Length: 194
Image (tube, rainbow, N blue to C red):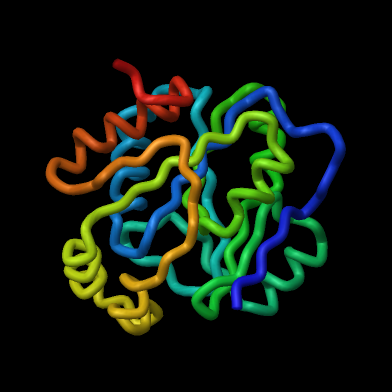
């Protein structure tokens, strides 16, 4: 069961900045493209990459803050997350500080579960959902290559289907730098540029 929540529902949507939610199946290369986009725009103070708080060990490709389940529960109870969810036996959260960045007009980029899209759209004025995907055989090969114990069954991970209703889809097959540039255009402009 997946548990999701927006920490604070208000009648006024949080803005004027943009929240770019990067979603997609395991093995799609979300972290690869996010990390490459981060490098490409490292000198742009208007773009912030949210660091997730997670109750599992981060891999080399992820920029997560690892916490114990008890610590996560304490942070959650204290209202320290802007968005949080539970999936795959772990808890994930985005620090509340991202709200300040969005209020200041910055663009915040976050790797999230597809399950938080609707709650995020209910809380933020400008949300862009980017679905990163790849063919099933590519997903399976990538999941197998990273050999992360918490991934569980590759067949289950590849076979899972959750509606994302993205604004933009990037098929991450081929040159990841080219796809990272596509992602960066979406981050900067809210949509791909011609």
